[in-house]
Length: 373
Ligand SMILES: [Zn+2]
Ligand SMILES: [Zn+2]
Image (cartoon, rainbow, N blue to C red; front, side, top):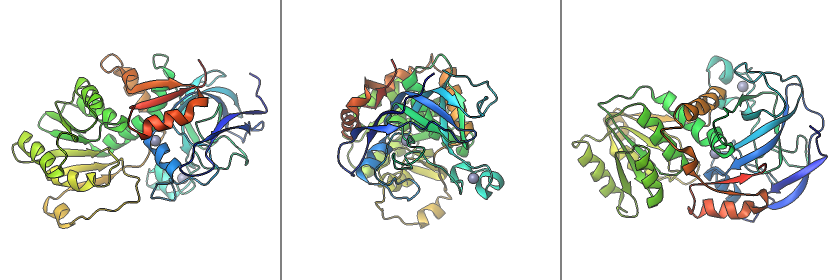
């Protein structure tokens, strides 16, 4: 496959401003172990919206400017430099569809001793570089993409459409990672999922397959809650109909015989969801915090965590095992869950700003950009 000298990319030059479509160099020389892909599809994550606004709390998550955003994507292999198998040993050939992780070095305390590659001390993130600087294409909103030598990558099963697999590469892999950290669920237990966006919907699907007594979703708008119900949520609490957090907590208490939820999964990204989730949690309960990236703070009485003997677990991103298992989860359950229902539109790259507006305004669950038909 021939590699053009440059390609189109949507470049963010100012926070809060629309992205501009610019010609960006395509790297012609790859580092040893790197892969060049042609992006087939990218889906938009709420994190992209927060990054575009400059509204993120951690330096690790923040991007400098100018930058190419986008981190949920599927690419097809165009060229490799000594990368002839994927991360689970499958042969890698030109034209194969893949998803890939940030660069995790595999040679630091976090990667090796703590088995926590998402905390890698030498992490090479997406959306990490000025498009003028090599390797130029580190964000998904571009026609081509660069996969670092230290990135894990896995091939996409044939049954999964491009945009669905793209959603696996952030929203679902993070959900798989989160439930890994949770441990087991069984028929005695009730799970509350806070948020009905892509993370919340994937959390509903993942929880349902683990067999709890109840899965209660708390979110809005109604179309998302309807999809959550279709995917197996036993109850849905619409935050527009029950706007007060204390009333929503009361609903959960009623549904759980006054005990509260065994497990709460925070997927909404709203900082106030934390105090609400802690109120809904039963004594001895487990709380997964996943959706939060905002710099905003909330008031919280730490004694509540002590009195409830709560386990509060933060989950950031995912490692290659979570990407691979996200694809396997989608493949295994594609007849039970129609994943395409989450992908609410498909636009060309030139309509990136419309797609971002749709995500920002909650008018869509997950807009996709299609670069290759
Ligand atoms: Zn994301
Ligand atoms: Zn590392």
